[in-house]
Length: 109
Image (spheres, helix red, strand yellow):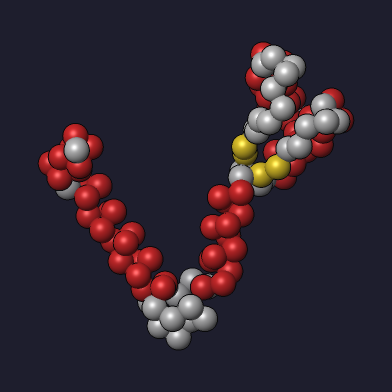
């Protein structure tokens, strides 16, 4: 076990111990790196009634990338024009992030 595993385990344990024992549902969300998997294993041994897992959103993102592949411009994908639509949505987000006045206006709305 290296310093990162020890630190991650310590930090998550502190948070878990700070809550009242009557709390039934809670979560510790991390990415899915091997270092975090080691920390989860340690935490599962320490807290056998708790469940530790990676970020579900991260997993879904990886799954969608596996389905669509790297070619987001292809209309021959299994779901038709959805990859093109997603790419255009990303372009709109980038546009607003790169234009500070418009971005500021959106944040005020």
